[in-house]
Amino acid sequence: MFPDYFEGPLDVSIVRRAVEDGLLEVDLIDLRDHGLGKHRQLDDTPFGGGPGMVMMIEPLASALEPLSSTTRILFTPAGIPMTQATLDRWAGLPEITFVCGRYEGVDQRIVDHFIDEEVSLGDYVLAGGEVAAAAAIEGVSRLIPGVVGNPESTDRESFRGGLLEEPVYTRPAEYQGWSVPDVLLSGDHARIEEWRREQRFRRTKERRPDLMSNGEDSDT
Ligand code: SAM
Image: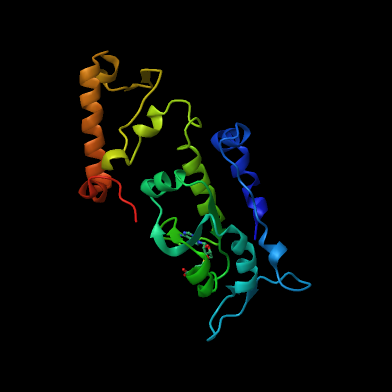
């Protein structure tokens, strides 16, 4: 319903470069073009009563039918949480359609007949699915070979091997009496690697023990 939302996220940094280099193509579909009648209606009151409006089946079906060869994802707080493993899997797909809901969500028959996966950005309710789609586009883009300069930077980061990334530092080595851990200035690569490993374990144990019990980041 709000394709303009994506003008910002698609026009900066990695995503913009991926599109410019021909590594990623993003098509925006304005649901309004599929709306009903003179007013291009997209929503109606819920059967059974209750607050809010529900996105109608006809406009969504008309938009999604021609995209049946793509993997169709609906963003909803009631979906499976999106994780790094989800993005890894999506990055391997040739074409994905992200459906961004608004109001109280979409008529369930859309989910039953046109959607391959229902995915949530997290345990909170946003006003629309656009933020989730922007997050997914950015997260998937940086996994496409050639988009991120040094592939090691996506291999070593948080969630790989079920761990969070260690703290990182850069120059100056000292600022207002706050110094960088000595080991990082030692030039001893084995010790540095050992320190980084310990830090990854310590952080993950403190903040996200659930990741450690999985051993690996897991997906649906
Ligand atoms: N009534 C819905 C419920 O309780 O689950 C919430 C609807 S929300 C106000 C409107 C739309 O925002 C949803 O259809 C979905 O597309 C999107 N949305 C909101 N929170 C989201 C989340 N955590 N993850 C993914 N999409 C979300």
